[in-house]
Length: 333
Image (cartoon, rainbow, N blue to C red):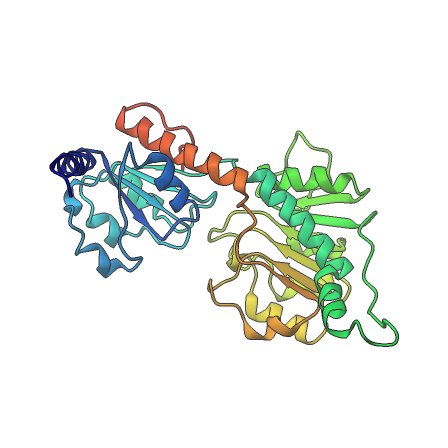
């Protein structure tokens, strides 16, 4: 290698060392794009996802002031104790159930999330999943691919979407976008949220059981917390009934997954479309062979367009923190 090239490489390495250090935990979906776009601004420290693997990092943990994490990595009190200089946690998810917000508050650590960035993408996917499971689109695709040489096509009937009563659990930014889309199908929108929304005319149900009893399908869009964990339980599924459907684009633990598997196996509900699971990336094996179930790998939020916007948002929040400016999408609790 020529001496000039060596000097340039050493200079580049030195400049990289001087960049603000950002610890990345949980392999966010946007990581590769983030590195491509912003490696000239930040030095990304990328360990393994296990807690033990934080220790061998070449950079001292005591100097790290910003962390990027995905929903798959839990920012707990023990993790925070390893990072005494931490000022900011940026999660690439809309939900924050994987972050100990109380501990962050006690330590004066700010938290930024994705805000409303994913609303359109997740709403699109929720409606797509509802159409898929009720009209048996994925099942029909498998049928044609495997039995297309049969003399007759004897495929089970699906259910009409137009005019159905759809119960939305969580009428936040995503839930509202789902409602707008389904109105175009002539669906009647009903909802349950923590509080009744005075700005909307959709019928409000204080009880998810009552909502299920009068709905043809439930779409879960709410955040996961102690109040919403297993918000769809055995009683809700019984109320939904044998021709009722469930779509979950929120968090896996919104549903009692063991009960859901049992109800599906026993034919006690019509079907389910799930983008999220209780023990990701593990999926109950019983679901894999069911034609009235549609499964996607927690990908509702991510499109090519959204990844670019997410990277810009993550970088913008870090830059705001480093400059002592207000965060773009600060999480408040």
